[in-house]
Length: 455
Image (cartoon, rainbow, N blue to C red; front, side, top):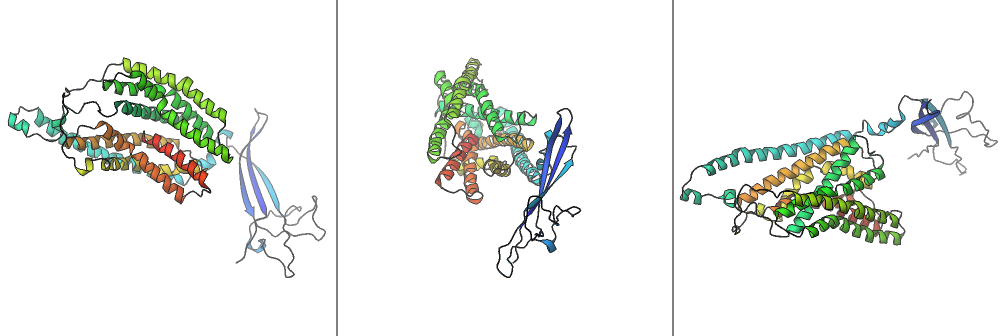
């Protein structure tokens, strides 16, 4: 085998004159490597020396020609190979505005087709679920409700089965941890509102996706400002459960997820400082984040909680029975954890293709710029979760199980478990981390992301 060395670089720099600014803006550059056997003078080289294959007057610019490649081999006497490294610069005036200089990397990417396929894949899942819900609503429920509303004898009423038997228990408040349930739902609403606001800001140009630090800062600030959403949603659900400890509910909503994340991040940051890692965060940065939580996020949660508890309680169309109905043995598909694992497949499947590009941007230093696609996937994910909850809850009610609150939550939250498994596959197949600490950092961060995705 013959080996050749690239020893010449051709720089092509494009620029646009800006008379108002009194100068020029560099809008792009291109570099082409060339392998060429320069003619070496016997007198040696000096800064003013002319090389006939490079800077001599009238010399042709070096090009990649197999006959002039620089082969990596010594002469017959075994002397060292002398190499001349050279370069040339060509300035080309362009009409491309300086603000659009990144378009050469963003427009016409071969990944656009994959993004389009991801959208089509997600839409097919939504259409499938919509068809399932339409079948349930139009055929099954309409027929059942029509027969249920007809005048019936006592014997006919006793023959009723399925979801109609639990109408007096279906709006019963969750008997297990209503406080925790309201806090988790409120926190999830805050995360969803923050990401949706971030996507909208990126769409209108307020956030530049090329600046990852700016985007992360915007997500944190919008998450803090969306604390009122968490407080309001958590308060409305907690009030429906006839609970009275509103101060504890508000405090846990404000401190639950941020407290857990800050504790995990602080412990991890200590180990990073001990190891001298460049990714360690300065102490004052943690203090600033803690200040945002105390000074902005917590008051916003209390404001939202105030309006949530002041709002009127949800009215239900039927009266709840005083004694809960007996729950018969459930079919296998309605029994946890099988129902949770089945419910999380479709929400994760609707975003799994887009997740590859997001993970590559997070851990492989690639560029993620398709904010329009990401917003569409986010909306499709929300629709998929809603439709999965409707279908799974209907199947559960048909099995005469009225305890749907927590099950409807975990049916979609289990998608975060699939995301964590996907991150482990990404670690093994795509990343080449050396040492224990980088792996621990990766698993910790992906655990946090999976938790937020679940909520």
